Amino acid sequence: EKTVVSVLDKFFGGSKENIVPVVKDQFNDEEMIAIEPLYIAAEDTDLQGDYAGRDAIEDMVKSLNKAIEDGKASGNYFHKHNTEDFTIVKAWVNEVDCIIGDTEVPEGQPIAKIQFNNEDAWELRKSGDLMGLSIGAKAVVEDVEEEDA
Image (cartoon, rainbow, N blue to C red; front, side, top):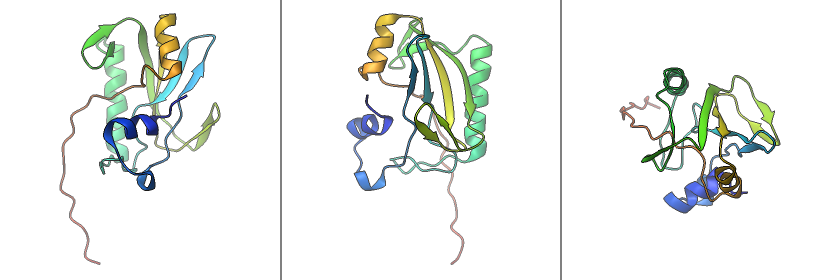
């Protein structure tokens, strides 16, 4: 089973020294459900040095759940090909440190529940040939002034 870190490292590079702990995907084989991270936990920095505060993470999850509710969030492959092979059921921000499956999940971690509707896609996801979610988002870069030390 590949982890999100190894996938990011494969496609975006990065050194082992700056790897941030991430949530491993958790799979419910009987129901073909995956619990997956959407992005890094609030207040963490990703491998490219990007940061998301708690408010931004909460807004992202709220926006995704609204899109799900409105029928505008569809599964797709590579941000290009819509599919009914899987459905994003819901997203949430983990409220407290906890364990999901065998993974410690930090407070502030945005997570999604994915229902697979196609056994072939499910097997591809479990094998790591089909990667996890991508938020496919555009961000606004804000200059943050450092306080005088």
